[in-house]
Structures are given as structure tokens and as C-alpha cells.
Image (cartoon, rainbow, N blue to C red; front, top):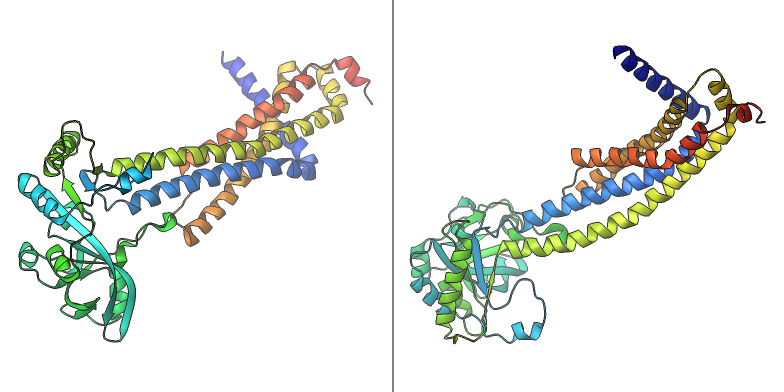
Length: 416
């Protein structure tokens, strides 16, 4: 048994050495042949890297939306079907948010919010069209991000309609520069608000063009409605479920209470929507699944062309080495050894091409990471790329290898 194993390993090693010698003997041809594989593997690795980067970037950009938080709004985040049906729904009013909070007093958090775009001024510096969000002290319970400096406003600030605000980190840099912003008054539109906190850096939607969370200002919703009014303004209600496991039960309860508040009959259709992070993730996965599929179909053409190139070169190699094959068979080389030798040669070509493609993909990933979004070539991508290269080598080399193995030694020896 050991002798047979030793003989098998020896034959494999010899076939591998012969394959490498054959490749070194025609370096230019081998280099040109691997180009198709290099491009194909580079395309696959880059597609997978960008896909992972987009996924991470998207999850980061919506991380402010808690997975156990449901959002009641007039329209769904993802609209399918008749848009005008949703557009014609009545706005969620501020008094409805108060009624829901009263009805669901046992809930962890019911947080209404609204927003407006306003110019913000501190001394002579003006920032235009910043998003001002009117919310409550429960904002910290339904969204990620906490004040890095100072504090968020309290229930007392909301109840007493205090004109206080918490600003994003980017606003602090652009508006105050080296000045401490705490307890400074800024003009938000026509009204003065006192800065009591600065939010930690949260980033933006990045590649997806989502909101810049560091260019937002939070003010008490009561102060917001006092300063900017609540008539014809859209409100959203964030409701935090008791736990992730009870999310669906909580959703039904939320729908039931909203239907009662809006006085909808048993057969009437909901004129509001319940949104969650799951709907965004589901939509993202559907879109990215199609994009990735298209990407792989396109890159597979490059690999197909590269594989055909390898097959052609291997057939040429068999023809050029016909006499050599005849001599080897005449001195005792078996079909299996000849077959293994040419398969090794084909696999070496493709694996070398795949490795070069991976090296280039690391460079591309570094550029993407620097100029676009976080991206890196992960270990699974490396494994997939090497396995794909190896499989292409086997598929492309099997026909030439079988042709070489089946050569008649007498005919091969007479070949000129």
C-alpha cells in the first residue's frame, strides 16, 4: 500500500515538474494565454469585493434605524404599484402621534418626529439647507448615536418648549471651528436655539447617496412646532418593540391602534404604512442579487474566452510535443501519466493567471477603499478565485490531455 502511494506521489511530482518545464520553455505564450484568466479573475474578485463593500456600506448607512423599531408614516419606504395611491393618503398629524403615545403607554418608546430644511447661522458663518429634526427625548431609545459632548434634551425640555438643540459633528466643525459650541446660541431660520450637545460622528449614506447624519440638528418637537408650525407637516412615529422576538406581534398592535385613531372601518384599507429595517434590507438584497448575477454573467464571458485560449494553446502544445510524447510512451510512460502532465500544465497556467488577477484585485480594492467606500478582498474571495482558476484549468485541459494520452506511440515517434 505504501509502495503504491509512494509511486503515485512520485508520478504526480514528476508530472508537475515536466509541466513547469514546458511552461518555462514558452514563457511568452504562457503569459499571453493567462491574460484572459487574469482579466476574468480580476473581474470576479472585484465584483465580489464591491458587492461586500456595498453591503457593509448600506448596513452602516441604515444602522441608525433600529432592527426592533417600527416606523409609522404616510408612505412606505419601498413603493411598489400605484404611487398615487400612497401620495393621496392623509398626512400623519401631530395630534395623532400624541394619541398613539397615550394609547400605548406601556410601550418602551413612542417617538414622533418631523423635519424641515433651514439655514443655520453662528456669528458671520452661515450653513444653508441643513436638516432640522423635531423630536423628543426618546430619540436616543429608537436610534443609534449619542452626544459626544454635552447632552441630549430632556423630557422637561420637550414639555417646556425649550429652544435648545443638539448638532451634528460636521456642523460643529463648519460652524464653530475651534470654538466650544456648548451653551452658544445659533440662529435656525429666524429663531435662536442654544446648543446643549454635539452628536458623535455617524457618517453618511456614502455610495448610496443617503442622508449625512453629521449634518443634522435635533430640537424638541414642541419647540419645532412652536417655531415652524405643524399644519400640513408630515410626522413620522418611531415605536420601539419590547424585543426582536415580539416585533410581529407589536406590528399588529400598532396597526390596530392606528386604525382606531384614524377611524378606519373593518373593510377599509390602511391609509398609513409600517416600515422597518427589514424592508430596506429585503429591497437591497433583491436589487443586489440581480446586479451581482449580471456581473457574474458578464465576467463569465471573460473566463470562457480565457478558457478557450488555454485549450487552444494546450492543443498546440500537444501537437508540438507529439514526438516527445511518443518517446515517453515508448520507455514506459502510461496514459495516466501523460494525462496528468497536461492537466497539471493547464491548471498551472490558469492558477498562475488567477493569482495575478487576485494581486490586481487587491490593488483595485485599495483604490476603492481610498476613494469610494470601505472595501477589502476577503479570504472567501481568495478561495473562490483560486478554485475557479483551478476548475477552468481542468475543464480547458481535459480535451488536450486526453488527446495526448491517446496518441499511438508508433505514430507519435514517426511524427515530424
